[in-house]
Figure (tube, rainbow, N blue to C red):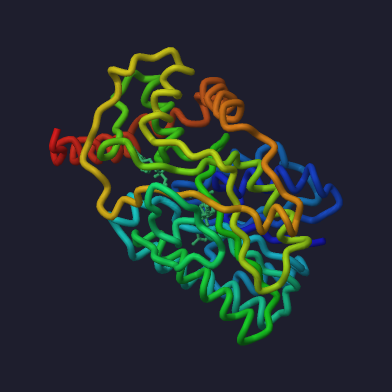
Length: 342
Ligand code: NAD
Ligand code: TYD
């Protein structure tokens, strides 16, 4: 099979390329990525010289380029991950989120329609459902109530994908996964940011009271679920993906400090994120029942391995600890600290 992975140099995308290479060695994999701040070609360095892996630098909004790539490599399946992915950045500047996440997705769907790609997998997120109270979990029929410009743009792309299935008969499947963790995650997201800051004895900014809950899944478990959905998911369906590892942010940050042997005095409570969803939790019964998927990693083991990976690979993340990136993080931190009630 010839598969196009969009966003294949980002966190989940690059883990997915490695996962597919290991699990389906005969497939031809084409990675398309614009290489924004979040994309890093180094993540795929181990595939250099692999005759069955092709890297194309490009923007999913460029229809001519997408048509060329899909035609040239006779693409049969698309795993669509390219996106602007950080909620905080979507609050600072929503425009690029609509451009890439909504319009870019629609360009890919148009090309599938024009050229006849066999299957399109839209990698959406559980954030499209909005926030939960203290109990219950999202099912595939929970209402979509996105809170942030990021999640709203993902919900739009998710619905446009389903509409192309119903209206034009495209073979589409949508996945909605919970928060991922693992190697290659850009240190602006909670887990890698806290690890990198703690390693440098910098303050760890916890938003609000730290009581917000996320349902964590190891990135490799997500990748295995995506492979199952690509091969065996039912056309036109939505699949929730989640590992049942709910943790309060504060509890998680304390656990990271313990793993790193650092003091809890590094924790700083800062102003909350506007529109901050209180709790996410996924009901993954459908994918478990239909595709036989279940996570292979426990959260404790996966988190310890992830911490070890960041400790062992400072050259991968050191560049974000200096220059423009560090300035961005520090200015965000100062702004939140300044606005914090405590
Ligand atoms: P990421 O930010 O690490 O990677 C995104 C990748 O997309 C980067 O390599 C970037 O260069 C590329 N990209 C951005 N704009 C592009 C464009 N216009 N054209 C081509 N490439 C472009 O994100 P991630 O965390 O790996 O998330 C991947 C996908 O999974 C996203 O669609 C995200 O919404 C979804 N998702 C993420 C999580 C999570 O916890 N990280 C959970 C559920 C769903
Ligand atoms: P994040 O990794 O940005 O993922 P998402 O917002 O998509 O769930 O944030 C995870 C949780 O951690 C979320 O509740 C916000 C919180 N958070 C902090 O408390 N401090 C931080 O510096 C960051 C980046 C996130």
